[in-house]
Length: 293
Image (cartoon, rainbow, N blue to C red; front, side):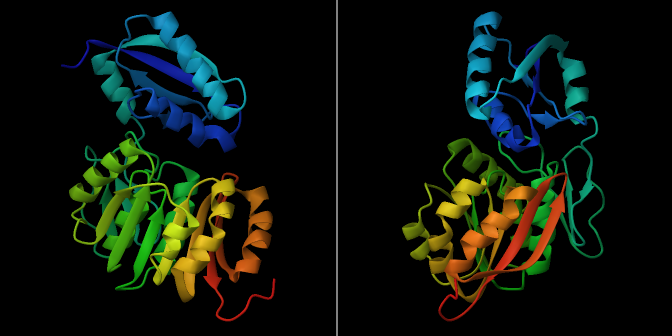
């Protein structure tokens, strides 16, 4: 039964680098979709808690911990009808790349004559083409996918990259996340997009050894934070066939040079990149033979 009103919360994110962290924490606390506004704030809605002050105090503490900074919180009551309209406002079809269009269920365009339509509502997992890091990754993925390839999507979130790969012709996609809520959302989205024959969603922690056990892959996509990406570099190298590609996103533009430097000793050479709103993504090739790093 839906409540007749919602607790609307506006989180003032201190900087763009923590937007994803704060959004993820809001979702963990039970938020309905966290939507980024033009001013950089995140707006979301909660089922009315029994004790609003205590709920907000606990939420603020968790958000501050996740962001590493103080997150300003504002709140108000919003009638259900108004909430439904606000949630949908501005969330229409997005042309994410040359061949990929992403749209919510309430505003579906016709299937494109060329390319693919991915149906995805904002929800409990990161990745709807509403964030610049996801759009960067989709544009590079569009260029990287070839018919029949076997790839992994590490930190799959909503499953958007895995679904896009499948719809573009990948033969096998392993979509992995350590968050059970993300995996549940990804499974739903895979089903809605009729990609279940290609995409295998798994809930698990990814380690270098786990990646190596899935050799040989043609490609790996990972839209996660830079520290995790760097730690997984030996696993990415071990998982890929010679000449395979690694697509990374979720990095700030100023982190790109450091990541390329860390990736070079493992045989990765930057071949393509994309940037938007201070976020950066890159596609690296695994160069056969000994590293010159």
